[in-house]
Each structure stands twice: as structure tokens, then as C-alpha cells.
Image (cartoon, helix red, strand yellow):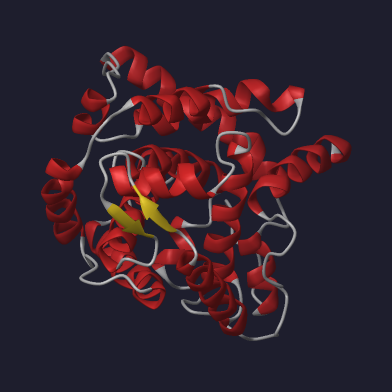
Length: 294
């Protein structure tokens, strides 16, 4: 059983904590940007929910023509989708669970990368990754999907007050990256996403992104069925209007229940196996015991 646990954990860490991540064990006693009692630590502490949320976030982000252009023109996303998910995981884990200096280093590095990402979308509009409005869109699409996945697949009883606290906490990272007017409550986030609908489009490259997601590679052959399930769950996480734009038929109540049940079952061995994830190491850095369910 220990061999199996190590194999599962190694596969998870290959995605969630790639080389170059923060040193989560040092400096001792450093709570980082949020600390262990934060809503951000709760929401970002479950690998399965974060992966599902990350897939949903990617698809939602790509419905914005300028965000789509930036990814297609300045990354190897088409050839290495797992690489993009790893880089996102590295940033989220480092800014959430790393010490303060590591978190600020990661934010500064991403800000520098953004300065080199600019061009023109297919409709001729200029885009820049450092544009505050575009940064706000990327942030809101991301964290709204993270929270939605956490509530659906990890903690359905997560109170609305804690959801508001999560949005308020995590806005500090978006603002540090250069975003502005970032929603800091559930109601504000819902209003923002609704206001952005007229700016969203689905074109050939957006549909190609969906195809790449549904055919995503796995860390190894044994993980392929699990990976496919997570991709399906991530796409199903999209808001109804986004699904309609992508021609994704809504699931029947029975199929939705089966998907949710399948994810709950598939997450159990992951939660059993992973003992050295970012949240576990961060708790050790603070001298805290592991929590049940972590």
C-alpha cells in the first residue's frame, strides 16, 4: 500500500508542485500572504477541486478574445497543456502557501513576464497581458471557478460569508499583479461576470482549446481515466451561458449526479495518498499538525 501511495502522490506532485515552486518548509513560522486560518488556504488546499477549477477557468478565460490571443500567440499551450496547468499551479501554490518573500517573488516574476506579452487579436484589437482590465478578467474567471469547484466537489456547506472572505483575500494577489476594480464578494463577482458576457466570443481557436482540454494527456497511462474525468468535470463547471457559447449540452440531472459522484470517489485515493502537498508542507513550516482530510 505504501508503494501505491507513493506512486499516486508522485503523479499529483508532478502537476501541482513542479520544479521552481516556492520552498514551502522555509522560513519557519512565516504565515505567507494569508495564513492557515484563511479561506484561501481552505479553497486552494484540495488538489482535485483545484484541478477541476483550473480546467473550468482556462475555458472561461479563453472566451475573451484578448485573453485567447495572448495565450495562443505567446505560449506553447497547444503542444503542452499540462505545462500550462503546472505553471498556473506553481503560481497559485506559491502565492497561497509559500512564505511572504516567495509569494512576492512569484508575483514580481509574473508581472515581468506580462510586460513581454502583447500583440493584436484576430479582430485587430491591441492586447497586453499587463492591461489592468484583462488581468481582472483572468483573475475573476480563475478564482470563481476555483471556488465553484471547491463548493461542488469538496465542501458543499462552505458558508456564503466564507466565500466572500475568499474573494476578499485573494483579490490582494490580483491587485499586486496590476488588476483593478477586483470583485471582493460573491455578489460583486456575480455582477462582474454578468457584465462581461457581451465581450465574450467563441471562435475556431476557442473550440480548438476545448478539444485540447478534452484530449489532455495524463502524467502516465494509469492516470488517463482519472485525468479524463477531471477534464469533463472542469468543462461541466462552466456557467450555463459559457456552455451555450461552446455548444456544450447541459447534463441531465442523472448524468450530473453520476459525474459528481464519480469525482467524489476518484478524489478519495488522491486525498489518502498525498501527504507532502503544498498545504501539508506549509503547515509543517508553521509547526502545525496535519488536519483530517488534508
